[in-house]
Image (cartoon, rainbow, N blue to C red; front, side):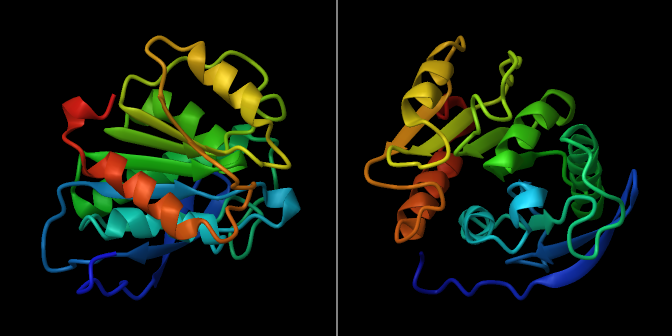
Length: 220
């Protein structure tokens, strides 16, 4: 983190979602300036306590904010103050599409960075085919659990971050899966990190910020 960086105060906003209003938080590190990009972050599984307040979700958003990019975190349908109920992933992809459209319209910004953690990374990966982000970050993608069918490779630069001690997602499976894409995403395997990256959030933030700070043509 830059010594002078002050995290922006989260501002409650409401996104019009396909199943009703979605509760969200906007964080803009430079509200007086037009941003070069905007970021959207998707949270982990709604049925297992996943919300936009998750620490990994905060970390992904913070990595973007430290680069001067405003972010939108949101709760999927049925979570917190968001209307609707869990829809097995299909409806949650629609929620992510709505959040991305809202962010682009709000900031007048065509360049989008999309990220997700666990279940949220599966949603972000599938939403990427529609929203075509400038960069995609998927942390602990649930390969073999939620990602069970072939997924088209996103056309954008793509980072996968995985802990090799993940107790929920098998690291070797993620490595094999990533290697099947052409070209493969950039894979950062954090030695000793488990699923929720306890004690490793600063390192996670650094890895993500490093990827996003590279010139677009160097991110592959």
